[in-house]
Image 1 (cartoon, rainbow, N blue to C red):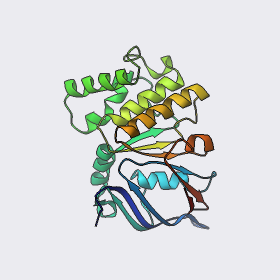
Image 2: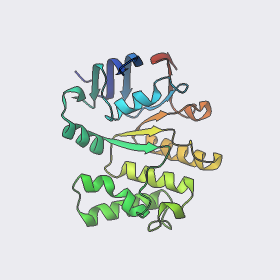
Image 3: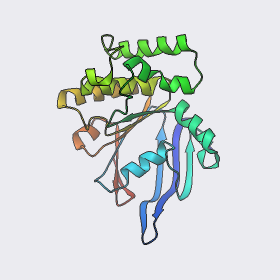
Image 4: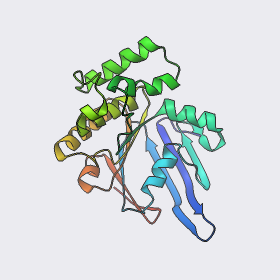
Length: 228
């Protein structure tokens, strides 16, 4: 049963990577509940399991064992096309590397999730323009990524994440490639989105960035060992 406000519920999530010679346990018995409207930072050193946990939360990977319920849906029972639908509709991704198409304009990058969702051309284009304008990029609408600063590119990536109006924004080191001022701007945008009701899960190794979240969870050797 899903309580009214749970968007993420993980029970005994374990992830083991097998190779021919060695078995690597990336996550060990993770229990995690994220309520709608939370702003949570997940921290840990390199190799602690942060990326693996992010990939499982984002339906980019599957656990070896355990149960993951996303907004009331037991995703372990879904087929690949159903997982793709859940990813596109319910989760907005913001990555450290921006992951923008280099030959596409800002608008063309932002509309991509809506193309996959089947939204008509006029509607998705107008929504992309509106989102980019809200993020202060009205002068960059038809520029390609190489004509924009890192901070501007990350704001394009945030607009793309918001395109299908997902409840969950999943961010992986979103300030990692930015200077201090641009990083603060991106974090302020995420905090503002959270105030408007978006659930934000932030993966970071930076303590000062994590401190901007409402809650901090810490991973060490694949275990969730500290909550505050």
